[in-house]
Amino acid sequence: MAKEQPQAEEEQASGGKKKMIMIIVGALLLVGIAVGATLFLMGGDAAPAEATAEAEPPKPEKGDPTYVELKPFTVNLGPEDPVGFLQVQINVLTYFDDVAEQLDKNKPLIRNNLTLLFGQQKSEDLRTPEGKVKLQNEVKDSIQQVINKYGSGGEIENVFFTTFVMQ
Image (cartoon, rainbow, N blue to C red; front, side, top):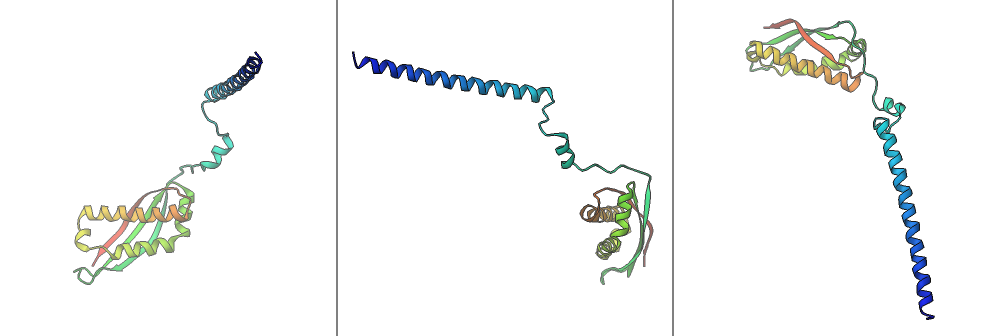
């Protein structure tokens, strides 16, 4: 009988531990349910509004159209090309004042990139409307890359060739 008493005490102690574990698990479940219900009722947005505002910079507002004129480009075409040179003048359209400022600020870089681009052209491609449109898109992409890298990230709307001469 002496052996039965310690065994009964062990069973009571282990039963007490099981009750304590059940109470802790129950409390954790209640806390989890409360947090889940709060997030659900608040729309699931766990981040405060201040943190969200810092993560997403405000988008610039579209304004009136602004045309930025670039001085004419005159470049030599390849030595095998029957046309000697290409002269192009460009106007850049944007609806963002900060982009117009960035265009002026970065004109030397833009001019450099465009001069290299124009020097790679072939006159036979530029004689077709498709070739001019392709070049126009390449010019727009080149300018947009400069604005994205060194400017505000606003967009240029379009580029227009106001002079386009091959001789």
